Amino acid sequence: MTVRIGVEEEFHLIDVESGALAPRAGAVLRRLGRRAEGYAREMQQSVVETNSGVHDSLEDLHTDLSASRRRLDRAASSQGLAIAAAGTAPLTRLGTVPPTDDERYLHMTDEYRRLADEQLICGAQVHVDVPDRDTAVRALCAVNPWLAPLLALSASSPFWLGTDTGYASWRTMVWQRWPTSGAPACFAGTEEYDRTLDELVRSGVISDPGMIYYDVRPSAHLQTLELRICDACPRVETVVLIAALFRALVTDACEKVRATGSAGCDGRHEWLRAATWRAARSGLEGDLIDPVTRLAAPAPMVVRGMLRHLRPTLEEYGDWETTLSLSEEALARGSAAHRLRTKAAEEDLLAAVDDLLVQTRGETLRPARSGRDPRRIGRPQIRPGGRRDGWTAASA
Image 1: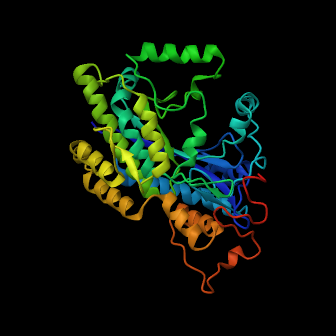
Image 2: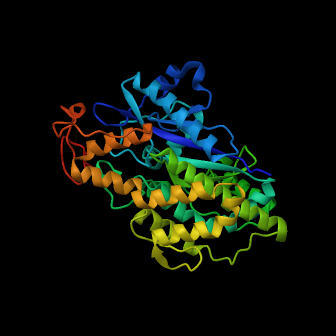
Image 3: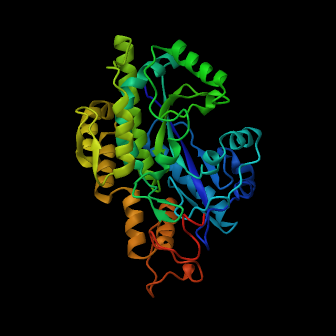
């Protein structure tokens, strides 16, 4: 039986002249009009979320995601905006983006204060069909160890408040401050999992089960297992690669639960947070923690080891050649974070923003003939770690 997949992507809205976040989600969604089905607001008014259809094949998923991005970008461009798929927008300024006027979001803003104010981040979530909720809960332990390499593949957020953080995924550092983020614990089944959710809600720490922000979780409203650890990805191909790998991981885990009643867990979850930190720090350009040995190893070795581990299932779905090709391409190109840093070092941070925008659209950035992009004339010039026109962490 084919296991179906779907994707939710979050996009920053960027003012094309300044490169800054634009709190204009409502205007963009209104511009979509009758085509707005599948698009939604998020907590901050500078973010729009898209929801793909449910697909059997990677090719259909790629087509869907590409078309959805084109529609959203056309709606944004009519407002003088562009969309950016990245964990953070390089030119973020705190206090310039109000929360969405929604009762739930306004409550969260009031309750979590600075934490909610700084939720200027975007992720990509992948949903994979599961036989039932109990299987999904039991499968968590088998999936958990392999999530950090998926984060490394997605890492696209080296900049925060106009400066280089030194991390490939600063979004992860922002996200992990939520009280229910990180790797889920090991649960014996649905009863124990739901009891934990109920206790957290009753404690008042969270207001509803939708605020369970585990790196992977049974969906609150779908019969799926939902991947939540990844940054938003500039290239659609990266999203498709992660979806293929996650589907194989979930399929294997569910089969293990079906055969044995348990995904197997040694109770050692303390290293999972360390592995996530390592992936957020290094991306594909340094070491990761190998899920099998739990020792440091170069990122390409860990990614290729994951491919070998998943090859039988990838072949069963006809995904092996595509996944292998996309993985090798990702390793050769390096993480999006690395590419953004390179562009910023060669030119400036606004050039990195421009590159991010064209990657999100699926285009190729052409260098300006004069050596300077005329679209950036008159815009503040920013270099990593530099101080230009007030775009610094200190002034944000």
